[in-house]
Length: 220
Ligand SMILES: NC(=O)c1ccc[n+]([C@@H]2O[C@H](COP(=O)([O-])OP(=O)(O)OC[C@H]3O[C@@H](n4cnc5c(N)ncnc54)[C@H](OP(=O)(O)O)[C@@H]3O)[C@@H](O)[C@H]2O)c1
Image (tube, rainbow, N blue to C red; front, side):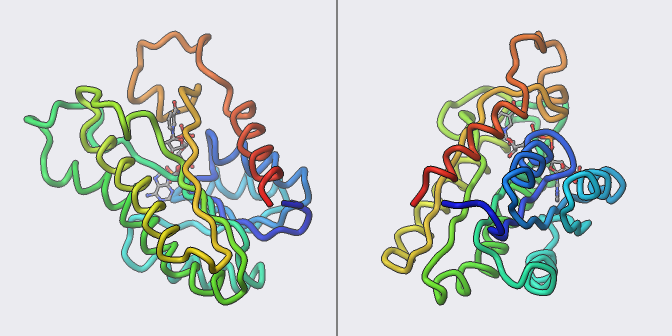
């Protein structure tokens, strides 16, 4: 895929992997709409990368339509959607026996239901155009049963499977769905989950962003 002028929505783009993706994709000439809750950090990344910014909570029920409308107005449509925004659920992480409904629900709303609603808002237009790519940023917690990672792990397992089902339902319509596991990175999410980790052994988000962008460029 030639990324020049490609219209891309990235959720969770104010820091960490999302911000690194914004920087790398803007250097390739992509046209970007960046989404996160905190407007200040988001606006700083948008200014640096020449992107559009929309402060929104992807877990809020109305956010998908707001993001889709902004993407239509600011970019004229969406070619690539990257579901990168994520929360851990309870922090510090807790075993399921201690996890409340609200904590479990927060992970599902942001990591699973938000991406479902946003894909639903955008995939129809992609299918009509016969072209589109949706990336689910996942985690090995989706497949490994790590104690204390319950809400997050279930949400990521759901997100991966959601992508598989979208892909099956839109088979032959030109819309592709891929899940991407970035591995352990030195970001705020990692620091909140594992404050005692040796940061020196964690990947830099910039290096991981380059890997994902290379994958996008290699896509047909
Ligand atoms: N770091 C790792 O080791 C690691 C490992 C495996 C997978 N991942 C995955 O990689 C992705 C990026 O994670 P990261 O480590 O870069 O995290 P991060 O540094 O904490 O960044 C998360 C981004 O998501 C935004 N965000 C969080 N909740 C949101 C919401 N409700 N609505 C909109 N935006 C929201 C944050 O901004 P606001 O808080 O301002 O909204 C921020 O821009 C996530 O999907 C994560 O699960 C990370």
